[in-house]
Each structure stands twice: as C-alpha cells, then as structure tokens.
Length: 50
Image 1 (tube, rainbow, N blue to C red):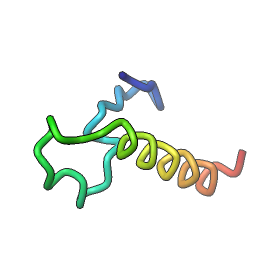
Image 2: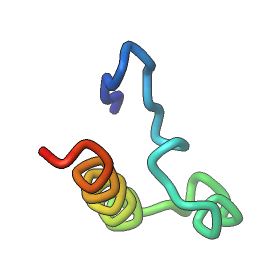
Image 3: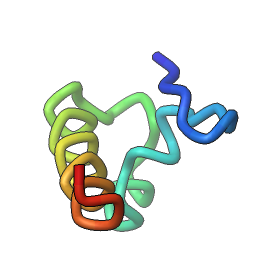
Image 4: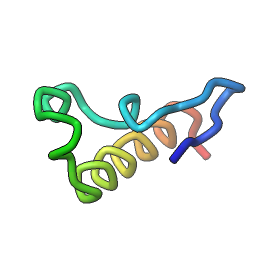
C-alpha cells in the first residue's frame, strides 16, 4: 500500500498519526489507516487547495 506524492514513497507508517504508532503495527486496523489517509488527504487539500 504505497501512495506516490512528490516522487516520495509514502508508506503505511507515514499515513498514520503519531498516537496510532504507539500501537503495535500488527494491531493496526484498516480503519485506522483509512482515517489517517482521509485526514492526510484533507490536509493536502488545504495546503494545495485543489
């Protein structure tokens, strides 16, 4: 699961907010990842104003 942005590979870990990283990686759910992704996307939309 990799997303390309600005020629930099974003890994699953980059998409997850810091509090979630405290959890063991195996316990991370897709829900956590999806929430982090949507948060990241909305941040990017705010920055670049698509």
